[in-house]
Length: 343
Image (cartoon, rainbow, N blue to C red; front, top):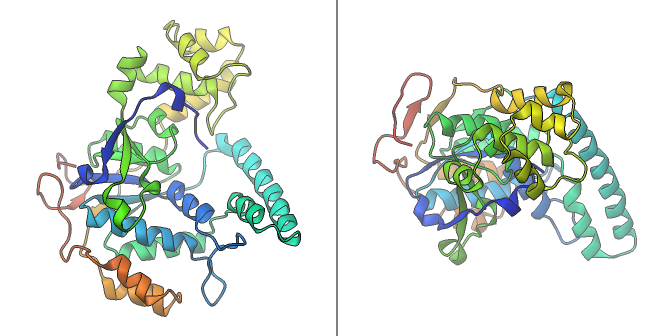
């Protein structure tokens, strides 16, 4: 879900082609859940292979990743590790919501209301370790690197962008900004394949511009988000984004601000610490290799029962060599051994 900051932010719209040569750290789970929610059959059931394994996320990853590669964009998918304990309440609420959506989906199916069934089905999405491993295997065959985060994927993506190893973090969650990403790309999941992908645009948010426009600093942006509510804390009742903005514009600091709204230090301090010093790693390898179309066909068509014509269309036009960065430099990067590589 993330923190609801949309009303305060004014992203810049750019064409997908404007990101050619740029390295992006994608929040993998964020994108995969979008695919699981939207790529479904008429009655809401996910697409599956012959053994009953879910493949909806593979459909989305195939088309999204090949679209990015055709545009010369260099995606690196960052996978979540174990969640923070501070996220327990959010995860519990999500589990309850999924259970309720499951009931409503089954009720709609029993009533023969396919439109309602499909609408409810998207909220039941679950990502298993097996599905995540299938996603990694497909990405490996497409020549795209995967990074394993020690905890929150969006925190790791923000760290990679902050260190200059990628141009931007890419996620739909504004929490990524609170984790310190200097630049956030949103809307990659909405780019359609085919003719329309050439016309698609994405949103780019520059944190330096956001802070200047709002008249606050990075810590105050975190406090603003916490006042509204994040995945790691409940917001303060009666405080929305605009009221929270007015509070942090007073520049009282976290302690005085939270004292003003009645939030004890034991509640806000661990969350602020998480956003400012999240578990991240520098032990990762960013290597974009030449795509392996035959390997992709074997994995999807032979092993997962995908339609060969659709897979071939998705693979059409992929670069025959490993992609290059915006500066034309090698795209092989050992993040923990090399510094200063242009993202």
